[in-house]
Image (cartoon, rainbow over all chains, first blue to last red; front, side, top):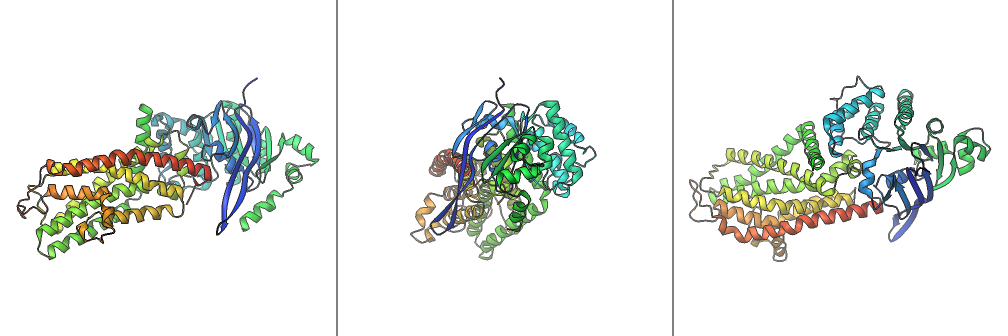
Length: 265
Length: 274
């Protein structure tokens, strides 16, 4: 039997917040979460803001160290083998995170060099990826800050893929994109998964996106993984007609309402 | 090895392009460095005292070099927080030593360029004549003190790792304290007695003391036409102290940085932005 690409067992992460003089409050961002992702699988983590999706991705990206639990990625454990893990992951976060005054080309060449790659070879690969993302006519000498959010996010995906990682961590990659850009990105990810067999861990709060892209989905609420399965299994388990309803029934939370409340606060 | 060289080059490549894109601010900062240095040096000109002018010129020049070097390294993490790229740099498979070496190399190049601009500018404002100064000795002292200042910069760079909100402020407080206690423009003896011990642990104190001797400042044989710069052997004590400081501060700075990075990853301080 093939070893899973990602194994997470009993993972916990607690943040302490000072809420007054000498007063501390605790927040379990990730609370005893276990799941595994098979090689070549696209696994979705669904949950509202504050449910622990980003903390989980940040732990897997070696940017956050868990309090307890076990994480293994393609045979490397965290946090002990963080250096090895960094070589096998590509990450796209909700914000594009570029040097905004630099052009797309400068940003991408910097990343290629940072990963010890030959800049010219990496550039060729990037052009190929951007072409697939429908950006062949983009002006790469334009500063990133002058590009639309959709274009920035596509370049962010190209950055993650230019190192050809077997594991891709996508933290809400289509949030804030217009429908056309969102569709471009989703089609590209489907194609990538089919063509390269890349293992993808995707966090999103877009039910349709999760249903379209993910072989299996986990529902996260208050840092806990409350349910897991295929979209059909989750709907059956909840006795719901849609994934949206299944989420509400299984987590007791209304995704959209929660999002609105977070925005208002 | 090839990959390490590329990774080091990545930080020089990034630094160059950021400088290019922010060229307006670079001009402003260099102009400000030149004007503040000239303002200080002109105090000596007004006093018609060449020794005082030279003391101030050497102070201004060296402080520009050392403070730029320190500041660029110390603020490198804060800049990444402002840009929002900190997490991407920290999740790249690049060792912290290579990362900080790349940052330090670019900071060094920046500091040299600024120092040359200030030197040329000061020549326009004063009758600066460096004939007789031991310039080679000055370069040796600067090379040795650079290592210590890179170490100090690494120490200070942990502040923005520890706190997104207050870290950058702390690096400036530290820099201001160095300016105060190191005898940049005045002898350290004029400081309050309780502050003077701090000057002993500042590498800038020894750099300035050594360079002033090598320029011939305080030497009665020095005239406006010909300086009487001391030989390198005359500053062996300062060189030894600076070398020791560098040997301690550089590796210690790196160790402290790596420890604080691990702490930041445990406490979630390594946020995207600040």
